[in-house]
Image 1: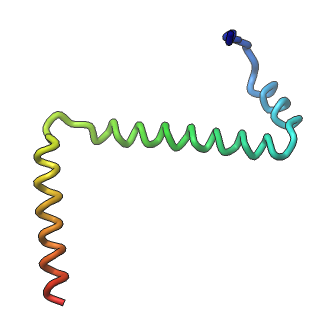
Image 2: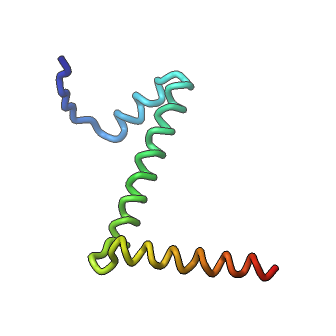
Length: 77
């Protein structure tokens, strides 16, 4: 059974705890924080580009147009 634990800590307390971690755990924590930051940034980017105007069919058509153009360019060279 997993129990949820909710502890109120200040930034300073968290920083003090992190400083006590062994080097490997600090590296692991850093990677997790980076991943969380990347996921947040990615979510923000996706939200910024979210639209109801584009359909999958429209996207597929545009992809095919670009593929065809690239193919034609490669045949010229």
